[in-house]
Structure formats: structure tokens, C-alpha cells
Image (cartoon, rainbow, N blue to C red; front, side):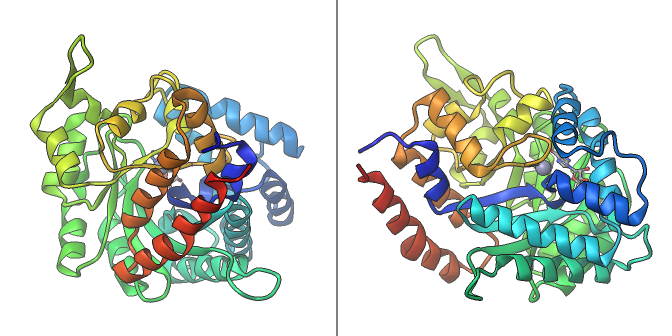
Length: 362
Ligand SMILES: O=c1[nH]cnc2c1ncn2[C@@H]1O[C@H](CO)[C@@H](O)[C@H]1O
Ligand SMILES: [Zn+2]
């Protein structure tokens, strides 16, 4: 079996569960929309400089400062036209990266300052994904589902959960909470999570990124999260002896044994200070211990990355081969919020044959 090259990784049929719509804009598009809508606060109007600014400003080592960069992307996503364009380009960029199934999230409540209603925001984004998913022959090249995010420092989670349920048959596949983690425990939004459970709806929670085990414990045992956004701090509940043997605490064992998916985003974690380097990122240990690890981008603009980029970094740092990349991909597809038969069809009909072709390529 060959070692995966970057171009081969790009061709592999990949799955993305954790990607923010407002963290993945093309810089040219930000500049265009800013000009058309009179948004005058951009740090630069040169695409390359603006890309560099986003990456540098996001390299702060603090989640709070990292999140400040979203002022500019959210700032230009306030009209239907802008939302349709950004969503369409997102689907195109992911398809060009070889992603075959993606769940892309954003917070509708952040896109109403131009006068759109929450429903209009959701409909614009769904329309953009529909357009951007189509190939030149009119057939879809990628399937994109939407996750609606509520901001954890705000008090609109119930409203957003209801919105997610209302649009569940029209392209919204789940719910999430995001934003600064410290001081904003997920249990503040318990009513929304309980509502979603009563509605048999799916949700993930950003937890264990900038704050530790209590956040993960609450997300799983109080809120009932199906998946964890990041979840890197679960390693605080694992002790390693000198000979490399791992002992799992009760929470870590629960997360592993219940197969709770971890939406890991290595590059983003370096920028926010959640991990010191790719080589030291907990993903290495968690993969070895067979947690249900998935690999994600978080914010392609802020991290200047793609799913291919994240995989390529992991291949370099950990020597992963095709079997590891396929394992991450199948883990992600198994953990998606679409129906089981559709997940299975993608695993058996697209992912496994696609990896098989690449594995034995000369
Ligand atoms: O890694 C992250 N941790 C927590 N919140 C985040 C992260 N990335 C983005 N957002 C937040 O999610 C909102 C909706 O997409 C973004 O506006 C940003 O504030
Ligand atoms: Zn995120």
C-alpha cells in the first residue's frame, strides 16, 4: 500500500462534520460583499493580505480572541444575496476538496441585523447549498446538511432549536451551541436540549475545547449531546503510565464505550491554544485508544485549511496511512445526522470503493 500524497488525499471521498459557514468564506467574496454593501471595517481589501490577517489574528492562543475575527465574516453575511453566495461557494469549495458529505453550521441569530428573519436566513443558506452542490451536468457532487448553532452567551437557544426542528425536512439535520466556552456551561441551555430530545432531533455541543472535563460531562450527561465539538480535553480523564499504558477515568470510558463521536479540529486547536502542536495533539492518543475520532476543519478561512490539509498534517505528524484515513472517514459518516440507510449507502457505495482505488494506486 502506498503512502497518501496530498493530491491523493484530495481525491479521496471525505466526510466533514464540523465546519462553520462563517469561518470558511473566500477572501475575494468578503471584499466583494463589503464593497457592495458598504461594510467599511475590513482590515484589508487585498485578498492575500486579508487571508494573512485572518490567519494571524486567529493565531492568538485564546478562543475569545480567535472568535473576534468572526465580526468581519458575520458582518458581510447580512443579506439574502450574500448568504446564498457564501453557502454556494462553501459547497463548491468542499466538493473541490473531495468532500462527499458535509454538515456545515452557523448561527442564524447573527445574520438578522440587515432585516432578515430567522426563517429567511435559513432558507437563503439552504438555497446556496443546493446551488453550490450541483456539478456542471446538474447532478450533485456533494451532499451538504445544515446544523443550526445557538450562541452560548446569548439566550436564544430555544428559539433556534425550534427553528432547527421546523426545517428538519428541508436540509437542516441538527443543532449545536458555540461561542466562548469558559463561563458559559451548556446546562444554561438545558430547556433547548430537552426540547430537541422530545422531538427526536440530533445535536452536538462545542465542549472540551477551551474548558475541561466539567463541560464535556455536562454536554453528555446533562444535555444528552449526540456528539462533541472538539472534546480534546477528554484526555484530562486519561492517565498514561511510563510504559505507555492508558488508564481511562469513568467519563473517558463512557465517551469511548458509548462511541460518542469527537469532532476533532487539529489546526484550530493550535490557534486557540487547546493543543501545543499537531504531533502532541490528543488525536494521536485518542485514535490509538479507539475513541470514535473524526477529523474536521472548524474554520477553513481562519486556519487556512481544508479536510485534505488536516489529513495531510496528520499523515506527516503520525505517519498515518490509508487505513487510518479511511477509519476517520467511516467514523465521520457513521456519526452523521442523516438516516442510517443513507449513511450506509455512502460508506459502501462511495467511501470504501474510493479509498480502495487510491490505496493501490502506483
Ligand atoms: O472553535 C470554535 N469554538 C467555539 N465557537 C466557535 C468556534 N468556531 C467558530 N465559533 C463560533 O460559532 C459561530 C457560528 O458559526 C461563529 O460566529 C463563532 O463565533
Ligand atoms: Zn467549531
